[in-house]
Length: 334
Ligand SMILES: Cc1cc2nc3c(=O)[nH]c(=O)nc-3n(C[C@H](O)[C@H](O)[C@H](O)COP(=O)(O)OP(=O)(O)OC[C@H]3O[C@@H](n4cnc5c(N)ncnc54)[C@H](O)[C@@H]3O)c2cc1C
Ligand code: SF4
Image 1 (cartoon, rainbow, N blue to C red):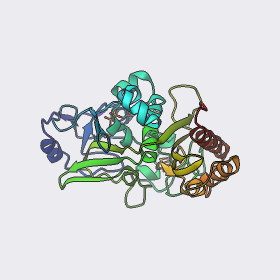
Image 2: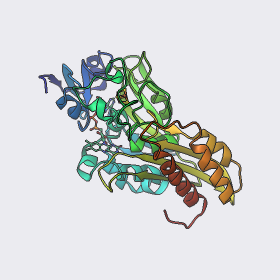
Image 3: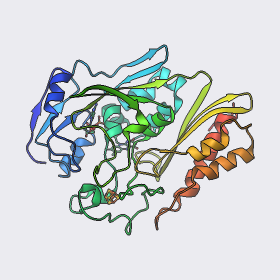
């Protein structure tokens, strides 16, 4: 790890003034430090070499509160995954988020990892994480994963980079229609969380559209009465593994009719992947095995597996089938 300066601003304005360097593919300049579980790993591997870190855990305007309002839940950016896993309101009203948090990493990591940092963690692609291997996302010409070891990579080809988005909570939060509040040099802005994520392009070799001078302040999840949700995750071992595939589903029923459904897949694209074709199949339909099966097929519409990852297709289908089956049949346990 290279030497760096360390600053402890006391206000968000002071922090924003220090975050004056745009986010780059290799993350130099000034970086915000929350739990440090990804940032410090990237620095130790020499993938990031910031000149300065700023501690954002003591900023008066950033907090780890989970607050219930008339229209939903507000979650401070410093809230840990452990809090999300344990909070009774999250568990009762937004089980998909509590389940996603509980399935991420390890108990020790979940006590350190903040939700803000979780959403902005970088891909786990083994070529990306190896400092000796150049790759397109790190500013190189090619993606070695495409012709190489791509067992863990994307099914949907939407970027020169085929790494998958690694966050479990992000998949659940996008399905729950969460919004994110950002604060930067140009003031506050709020956007659907789904729009924070964007497949990397030649002009922007990162997976999010957050600006270098912006901080995530909070998330807001709307409450819709009668909504059920779940998050299912396939892993290559039972704990401490990133999602081979994750599925978050949110469903509102009126009797046997599916009023509204949102289905988001993780581990299949560089961003949480909304399965809109599947949603179109089931929205407004009466529940039946046949409807669910059509939605399952539609969820993987457009998938173009790489040489070593076609196993993800039946895996994703199985998770979508289980998630929809349980949410549309009250009483059935997952
Ligand atoms: C062994 C291991 C296993 C893991 N398994 C999983 C898993 O199964 N599922 C999963 O979802 N995750 C997993 N993770 C990732 C882990 O959840 C993240 O590393 C963690 O959530 C990041 O949060 P942090 O607070 O430590 O962020 P940091 O490491 O402090 O920061 C990460 C990035 O976010 C930026 N940042 C942090 N907070 C803010 C903010 N408020 N505003 C703007 N920028 C900010 C930092 O500058 C940095 O670029 C795993 C990590 C490890 C090390
Ligand atoms: S998938 Fe992305 S991160 Fe991995 S080697 Fe290719 S360009 Fe790099």
